[in-house]
Amino acid sequence: MRQFLTSKRIGKTFVLLFAFLFAVGFQLGQPLRALALTPASTDLKDTDKDGIPDVRDKRPFDHDNDGIRDTKDPDDDNDGIPDVKDVRPLDHDNDGINDVEDSDDDNDGILDIKDKRPLDHDNDGIRDDSDLDDDNDGIPDVKDNQPNNHDNDGQNDDVDTDDDNDGIVDTSDKRPLDHDNDGVRDDRDRDDDNDGILDVKDSQPNDHDNDGQNDDVDTDDDNDGTADVNDTRPFDHDNDGVRDDRDQDDDNDGILDVSDAHPFDHDNDGQNDDVDQDDDNDGVPDVSDQNP
Image 1 (cartoon, rainbow, N blue to C red):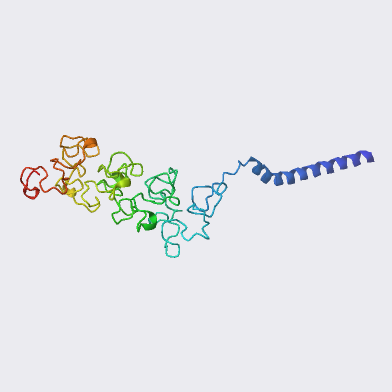
Image 2: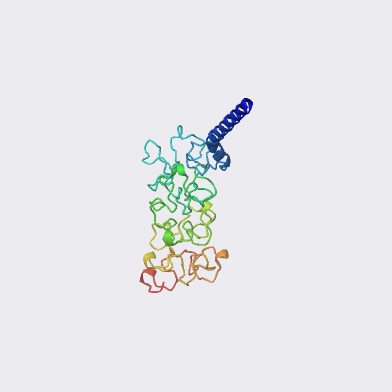
């Protein structure tokens, strides 16, 4: 009988001990169980907001990805303003919004979440920190007072309502960086103003009518006698209703532009219309001619 009671006591003690250990183990096991069931971490933290998650970024503290760590970089956002003088040293496009809060860091019209190159202002495939001409205006950044002013009109693109000066407000412009509206973006267009002179040889790549005035200061961009402010087609030289970039004979002289030495010489007298005082050679000076 004593042996039975002893065995019963031992059994009861064992049951209580097992229950205690089970209860404690369950409580301790919960965090481990939760941890085990938690999916692998997808931490995409990007300390310098350069588009490269820290886990894959060789330089997680190099904001503009120029190979110089921010602590040693005199211009952290590569905006041309030294950090010591920069009110916003992490505002790449100088639009007044720090990059960490800006949805379009390079102000190229493409939201960063969809932009393969969020720090390529002119979308030429070359990141701004490696690009010698960030706004593709023909002036190297080292000599450019406004390295983010595409059309050289004195207004940086972030405040300019018409970045390519094509007469179409950026908010309505499908191609805000296509100066001559020929469907080819300026960074890929070999003749940005469609004047027949390749940009590499053109001293004024944004002077549509070749009158010596860049379109941003020229009041009559196609030299058709109608001021741009009143002209429904500011890039239609012969006013035939066909825009110059689509017109095969811009001066309507019967010679196709591809074969015409002077595609803006209406009367074929060897003088371009912008310097010719009698564009149609009718004996009436243009200033007095109702139909020049």
